[in-house]
Length: 329
Image (cartoon, rainbow, N blue to C red; front, side, top):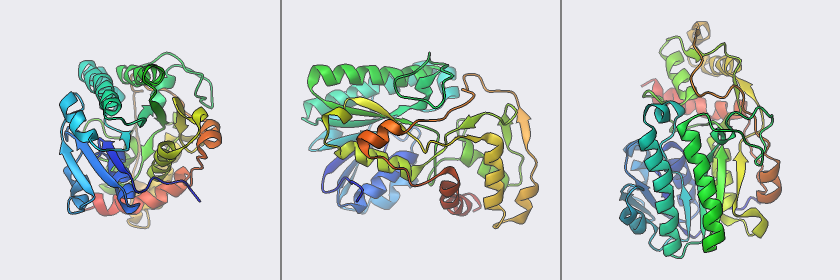
């Protein structure tokens, strides 16, 4: 039976976001009390509205850059799942200072608040962007390159702080390097929207999606339920060798953008047959993009017992119904 987090009080930072809200939904079903800390700069109120009437859920509207907000949120908690961050490589290139303030100063605030509240276990969202210009495939946790964006720098610095804090303060910190997560509640709008919901929205509207480059760039697309599983495993693992380290969270399979578009057309066509005829536009490559990304999940498999259940195709089949009903309104 899969290890799960249950009967605990859990803080989810960034809980109104895509990943955070999916974590909260699952944790509430498992008889946890859940605190959500979010300033709604990128998170959506609609994502937490279903939880507001649940007596086991508490919303703290605050900012991880404010230490007092962090102290308030961690009060009485047993574990922290730190998801709050300013994502997006392009956003970080356009505004490196804010990305730095949120992702680094905010991270330090959350971890120190947890320490001072007597919370030992903090699971935090790391990023596959940490691999930078490393060309080795598959990506293994101990082999990284030089960062290619301010965002990547901030996520790497989180790992460095976590390593130091673990040694200095006896904390148990576990970083999860997410690889291109997708699924329900992922925002398709805005300049920094992730590629899958952005493509889906365009196809539903019979608009031509734009692929940066020739479509050969590839990613290890990872369905949200795999990420929820990894967070739970990291929260409950009881093995000294498994803490104060980082793990890839992915499926371990590479999909090109051209292949992705074909899958999306295939799975959306039963809803609207004309989608299969929508043309694709190819634009310039995006600054700071890594050409290929493929994760080794051997370490997470061995130390966390992580066994992702959803391939990209299986995840897309699960997600398409949600995307269709949400985006075709």
